Length: 284
Length: 276
Image (spheres, rainbow over the protein chains, first blue to last red):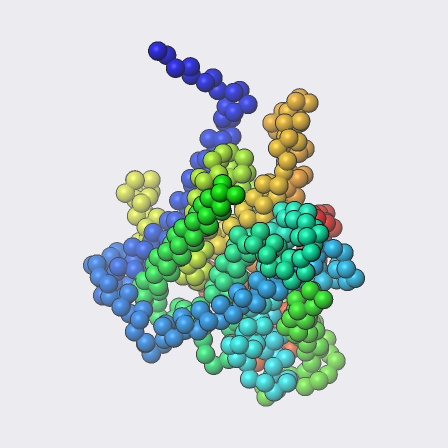
């Protein structure tokens, strides 16, 4: 009883470039995770240790330090501030860039101008955006604040990203689905709610996630526009310029843990959504 | 109609502020404030001061080096992920592996290089224990080398993303057609794949170059304060309330960046490729 061994198709045989590129990928991973490992290791630094090797002991001291409001920075408060701002930025970005992405499918007057406005906003060095907005608020006699100037400054960054992301999402969308909905008598709003958005949902999710991350990590645009209350990256920035402790690394480790958790949850939700869809499809 | 909110926000928070510092760059100033005027002194200072020109040169040099490295690494990794990794699930896992470090603050990831590259850092210790070097290498940290490393570390993903997006849109039958017509693998690369991924290459290049041109944190931190960038010099001026020279510097930088982007868009019609 010999089983027939499938002969490899010559087209499928791996060329030498495969091995070269696999090595490159491996090196890139080492490069990417080397410093991350340093962060994870040093976050368990002993209470008397510093931000460099060697480890003087193993402790959770610096994780505790993250939650302690210190003289230099108040991490928990700054964290919740960043979270609120990032949620606002993320919501606004998704709604507006989805509308924009859908609008760009048809030519409209001024489309070129709007596109170049978006690209210019994307390539503008971040600190300059904050500088301009800060000057503007000063001239108008307004006080810069988290949900006015800082929100606006971050949107000049997340909206272009969101729109480019939406282009990628919308391009893969088959227009005939929408036409079918219209033919069946759906109003434009029903069409958007029941056809367009559900089909585009995974892509919209991706744009939302990247908008959230971009905002959560932003400091160049925010530093001159935030006013009196710092976001998390600005607190970190302030900490680095004064005294660096392994607390920063503990913060990095925590962020990684939380993002793994979030990615895990997202994967489970997406897989379940796919399974439900398959079951639904096989039933009907 | 649908485009109105987008346009409004960008005009309000991007176009108007930019116009504002264009105006301020011509203003007069002293220690107590800025005064409306039309003078070119701030610009004259930029173009006649050797140290300012040196800062511009150094930023452009970093932008060029980092662009070349991230383009090479980014394109090859994107190509590997799209064309060589055949299992869709593994591909998603690999993409996630590339993306996960980016959820950690860029500031923290930058300073993590200091204990990695330092004299008694992880890398030097490894080299010594492997007996590759007797004494710790000094050039690794607080040098141009460490600045470039940190930039490449932070921005390669910006190259991988758009290029992978372009590559994944290439119709596989085109490659088969080229092969059937007798093209070698190198010819397929230069005549089919690279031309069809130029939108991603252009977009990635725009993102990487403008990030480096706008940086003021990495260069300060990783050079140990030895190097400056255009924007770090500018932020010093802002802190000293010297708004007109800062604004003039900002204008010159904007013009440089805009020219670079315009040249790239000349070569590749990004818009036509994206919106179709």
